[in-house]
Image (cartoon, rainbow, N blue to C red):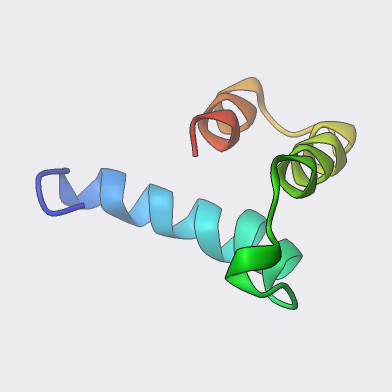
Length: 60
């Protein structure tokens, strides 16, 4: 994230800390599969989050 503007870095960190890390914290890295990520996305889409945030989640 070195080449990103500071505000972008903070936004990405917030997405990781608030939406991705809490979901995968109990998984070993090797055990995270495409289905694990799809389940995370499905749960986040059900929360009625802003469209921009959902697009960023999909990009990760």
